[in-house]
Length: 124
Ligand code: HEM
Image (tube, rainbow, N blue to C red; front, side, top):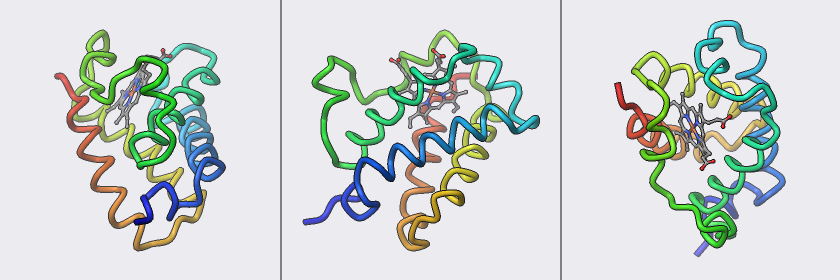
């Protein structure tokens, strides 16, 4: 059976999505609050979120093999993530989904699933 990772187009498409995600975070003034939570260099996060999403989408499990877990609650505990921050994260994701021009049917499945993860990360 094809995984969402396969349907999307594999690693190049996941990496393109994540690149657009952090580009949006870095340039959209309306998400400054979450940009400021991140380190000035977003490149390491581009790598980490790409590996996370590759595993999450059913692709290569490099993220897990490197000793990381799939639950994102603990890594986000140091940050105050309220509903506004969650919505800003989704705003960046929406811009990225649009930029990589994914199949609309796939977006209909992926977007709510990502919104669920974003809401699980919310801690305030
Ligand atoms: C809901 C709003 C969210 C905010 C405000 C947020 C913010 C952050 C921040 C500030 C960091 C640390 C950045 C740094 O070290 O420069 C981080 C790390 C990370 N975030 Fe988020 N995040 C959110 C949601 C998510 C979601 C939904 C996912 C997964 C789909 C995710 C995946 C990750 C990963 C994989 C890391 C790296 C963790 C590690 O290095 O162990 N985040 N996030």
